[in-house]
Image (cartoon, rainbow over all chains, first blue to last red; front, side, top):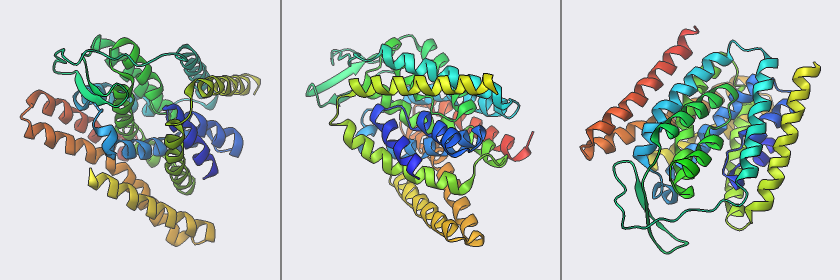
Length: 266
Length: 86
C-alpha cells in the first residue's frame, strides 16, 4: 500500500499516472514478477481514470468526442499489447520497459518549460475541437484539433504500451495531443486521463484471467494510489513542476538503466 | 457520473475489507471480497462508455454513437479473449 501511495502521489503530481513508479517498486523492491506488477498497475490505472472521469472539474475540460475517437485506436492497442505480452519472456519485456522509461524521461526533459497555448475563443472549434472556461485567463478558450492521424497513431502506440507494460498510455498521449494536435494542456490531460481506464480495461481482464493480478497486492496498490493521487493533486496545485519533472526524469533514467542492466547481466 | 463515484467508493470499501481480512489471515472471506472489489472496479470504465453512448444518442449525434459502439465491441472482444484463454 505504501508503494501505491508513493507512486500515486508522484504520478498525480506529474500527471502521468503512477504506473511508471509502481512497477519498479513492486518488481525490483518487493520481488513481484514483472507481468504481475504490470497487471496490478493496470488496476490502479483503471481506478485513477474512474476518479478523474467522475470529477466535475475534469468533465468541463474533457473532450468526449475526440477522446472516444482516439479510444478506438487506444483500445485496439491495449488488447494487442495484452495478447502479445503473454508470449514474451521476461528479458524481452525488461528491455521494452527500459526503452519506454528512457523515452518518457527524454519526453519529460524536452517539456520542462512547455506552457499552455491559449487560443482565441471566437474561432469555430469544429466537430472535434472544444471550448472550456479557463481560470488562469479568466475567459473561455477554444481550440481546433489538428493532425488527427498523428493523434490516432500515438493513441494506438500508447494502447500497445499500456497493454504490454501496464502503465497508462497518457505519458505518450498527453504530450503528443498538446504539441502536435493543438489540444490545450488541460484538455489533453483530462481527456487522456478519462481514456486510459478504458484502454486498461482492454488488457486487465486478460491479465486477470491468466492469474497475473494478485488480488491482495492489487487491492493494496489501488487503495494506495487512490489516496496518493489525492495528495499528489493537492500538492501539484501548489508546487512548481519544473524541478519535480527534472528529478523524475532522472529517476526514470535510473530505472531504465537498472532494467537494461538486469536484462543483459542476467 | 454519480454512479461512477459510488462505484469507486464501493469497490474501495470491498478492497479495504478484503485486504484487512487477508492480513488477518482469513482467506475464505477475503478472496471473494477482493475479487468483487476488483471486478466492480473493472466494470466502471465500461459503464462510462455505456453512459457516453446514451449521451450521444440524446444529442442525436449518430456518427459518434457509432464510434462509441465500436469501443463497446472492442471491450466485448477483450472479454471473449479473457475467458477463452487463447
